[in-house]
Length: 491
Image (cartoon, rainbow, N blue to C red; front, side, top):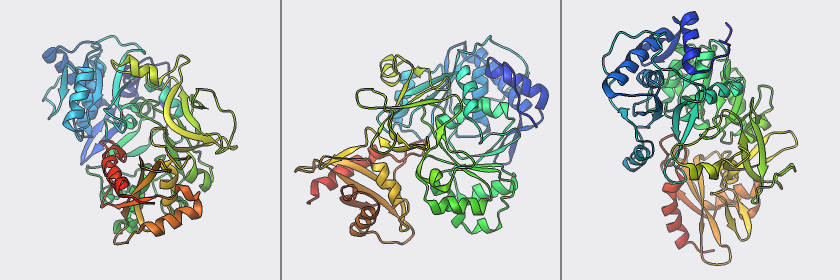
């Protein structure tokens, strides 16, 4: 099977071609419900008519989707596009204050927040509005790890350009496991890629469980598995894995977090397929990734090289490009591509802070380039702390502790203290099983691998780490407890 290619200006143009040639192929599978591409387009058109006739939606109006991930979400998204609106996902897990902020920022004319209306009479090839490549199609909200969410908006051309960086995670006819919330950039901006490659999206039931994911891999003949290190670890440790048929897998994708080398080897051995790492931000849409033939060392310790159409550079505090290679040349990661956001919705001030006059997106992530051309991330510029005059990047410590067998999860937060050190690191740790953790052993482990000043100064043991609505560790939520611990700390 070949991907759908052609000079399509908009998502709907591409969708028409998919319906005409492969309308009977499955587009989504979720909890026993199946939806073909033709059914998807038909139901979306009927719902688009309802939006126009009942709620007066016209071109450029924002429409919210406050629904759980699944087929109804996908239908609502396409209905908004076909009505000429701008779709914005509102993760149901967000707090009231965050939802109020999003609503105030984008003023949706209508929000889907319950069962979709029973409508009929849809025509999968009907055109209700005239669309252009530069028309806004989606607003994706950041995770809120640095304050209230910001709305990154994308046009049709962004979604088309994203496909240049989709390989090797996308091949025509793939059946892809989808563990991400549909309001996430990894779902909202991949629709063109999924249509172009005729991908069947297998939606993991919420909340995610290892048993549920394993059952789908086997029964739905999944070809592309996706997840974070913790999810793969839980799948391998689950008793059902021994009887799970993974022979359909051709590739396994994993997040940008550091992966213990033993996990990569285990993934390759047990899943019997290549492993690739991807790095991106909400604003960038796509950024870097490892390649199929990369070594375990590259996969474990880097986030790879720029993907198709993406340009990357590192800059210092003054904005000067760093041309050196190695850990002595740490700078802010800057990206430029047509796939990246066009700006923050209704927020020109913060847009100007994020995208400079030359079109470079300043991600706020810090990293350095190796001689091999692979990017190594060291953390966020807002997370770095200075201990005794030395810069400390929490991600280095967290990555190091990823190999500590008694730990199931770790997060380091830098906080100020009185005295000559200025700031110290507070480690929040989740033990694996019934393992006991103590600060002395953890400090010794870190000192074996990193400079002594990077060893954490305080330890807080938790049952689990707080997460944002899109699954990232919520360090803002940890900050008050870190300050409490620092206040009681003595050298």
